[in-house]
Length: 454
Image (cartoon, rainbow, N blue to C red; front, side, top):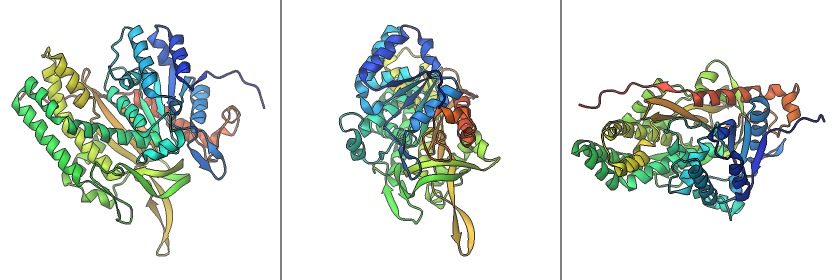
C-alpha cells in the first residue's frame, strides 16, 4: 500500500473536540467556509453481504477531501449532546460579533450553515421509532435531538449566504420529518402568529392565514399513507409513520434510478394538492431528474424505510400556501419597526421552505404475466427542497438522497488507494452527483414576485 500525505479530515468525537476546533478558527469566519461538514448520526449506515459494515461518512470524507479538495469536519453527533455543542456554537457566534439565537440548537445550525457545505449522513435507526435511537446511543443522540437539529438547519437556510445542505439516507428521511414537525409547530402556535399578523397587517391577511391553517389542519388529518398493495400504514400528520415508514422490501443493493412518476395513491389526494405539486415540479429543477433523464443510473441503496410520497406532496402544498402569505408579510415588515413581530413571523413562516419536489424513484424488474416490467419500489428516492431569500428575492435548494452516491457498485468501504487508482470508475457516477449537488446548492434562481399590494 502506498503512503500518501495526510488528508485534511478532522473528527469531532466529543464536546472538547468541538471546543478545540472552534478555538482553532479564532475570529475568522471565512475559515469555516473552507470546510465540508458531515453530520454523522450513527457509527455505520448498515451491513451489506459483500462489504460488511459500511461507514459511508468515511467514504464521503475521502471523496470530499481527495477529489474536491475540501477540508472535512466529521461531526459524530451520535457521541454527544447537541445542546452542549450548541452552547459552544453560541459562544463562538458571540466572539465573532454575531447574534446567537437563544436556543442552543439554533445557534449550532447557524454556525454550521456558515461552512462551505453540509452533508447529513445515514444510520441504522428508524425515524418513526425513538427506541431505535435509544438502543444504539441511549445516552447521547435521541430521535428528537436529531429531528430538532435538522429542523433548525432547515429554518436557517433562507438566510442569505448560507451553505447548501445535502442529506443522505437517514438524514433524507429525517429532513422530511423535520419539515412536518415545523408545520405541526406552526399549527400549534397559530393563534399567536395570527395575532402578530393582525397587528402588523390588519384583518385581511390575518384572516387569510387563519383560513390557510384551517385547511392545512383539515387536509393533514385526512392524509393517509398506504403501501403498494393498498394497505393503510398511517393516517393524519400526527401518526408516527405518516412521513417515514417501512419500505415494502429492504433495498441493500445497486438499483435503477428513474425520474419520479406519481403512483396511483397520489390521485386520492385533494385535487389542489396535486395541481400545486405539478406547478412546483414544472417550475424548478431539482438536479437529479436532469441527470437521469439523459441516461440510466445505478445507485447504491442500504435501507429498509422510505419517505411517504403523498406526505411530500402535502408538504409542498402547505409550503406554497404559506409562501403567498410570507411574501405579503415581508412587504409589511420592510416598513415596520416591530422587532418582536419580525422575530416571530420570520421563525414561524418565513423560515419555511417554499416547495419540495420528488426528483427520482428506484425501480426493479419484475416478471408479470410472462413479461418483464419495471416496478417502482422507493417512490421518494430523492428530493429538492426550495427556499426563498426574502431579502434578495432569490430561490435556492437543498437536496436529499435516499441512496448513497458515496458508496460504489461493490457496496463496500473505499480507501484512498481506490480513489487514486483505476478502481475509481465504479464511483464516478456518485462523485459526479456529489459535485453537481454542491454546485446546485450554491446556485440561486431569480424570482420576480407578483404585486401583493392590492
